[in-house]
Length: 332
Image (cartoon, rainbow, N blue to C red; front, side, top):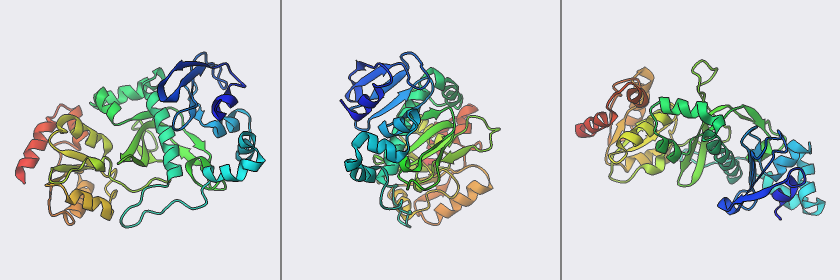
C-alpha cells in the first residue's frame, strides 16, 4: 500500500472507484466529513488527495500536517523514519535557491513546478464541480467556450490560503506562499509550468490579476508560435484564448500578462521566428507604449490595435474577432 493511502486509510474508509491516474479511491472526507466527496490518487505520477466539498488537497506530508497537526519534520519522520529523514527531506526542501530568471529567461525549479501542477490539477477539477459553478459562469460570460476553457486547463480556487514554503520548493524558514482565490490560469510552455496566475471574478476586489510567487517571466502560450507562420501578441490570457478560439487556425496567439511582461531574449527570439507579428496590446496609452517596445525589437511586427479595449471585450460585445485578425494579417 502506498504511503498516502496507508496514512489516509487510518482515518476514513476508502474504496477503489476508478482506474484513472493509477487508481482512484473515494470515501468520506476526514476533514469535513462530506460523504463520498473525498478522492485519493495514491499511485499516480504525483500522488495526492482532494475533497470536492471543503477543497482540502495535497500529498501525504500535507495530510499529516493538516489532519494530525504535525510539523514538516515530524510528518517526514512519521512517513519514512528518522533514518530515512535526511534523504527524503532533501526532496521536499531543495538545497539550492530558486533560479533568478536571466536575460535569456529560465524556468522555475522542478520543486516549484511539481507543486504548481498538483495545485492546478486540483483547481481544474474544482472548476467543473458544483463549487466551481460561479467561476465557470464568469468564464462563459466572457465568451469563452467550454472546449476553450478545458484546453487551456483553467481552474478555480474558492478560498485564499497560505501554503507551507517548502511545498513550493522554498526553504522551510521562508515566508508562507499565498494562494489567492479566483480563476486559476496555468502558464505552460513545452510541458514546463512557468507561472500560475489568478483572475478575481469580481472587478470590485483589491486585485484583478495576481500570481503565485516563484514563477518565471514568460509568454503565455509561447509554444504555439511556429516558424514562418503569423502570430499576435496581446496583454491578457483571455485575449489570447479569445483569438485562439475565433481564429486559431490563422494565427498563434500569445500574451505577456502585462505591459512589461515577457521582455526576455528567449521570448523575443521566439516571436522573431514568426512570419509576422500583430502587436495587439490594449487600445490605450499603456498598450501603445508596450507595443512600441516590441516594435523596436521585432522587424516582423506592426501595431494592430483592438477595435474595443482588448480582444476579449470585442468578443463579449459582439465584435467579429476573426475578421479583425484577417484584416491585420492583410496589412503586412
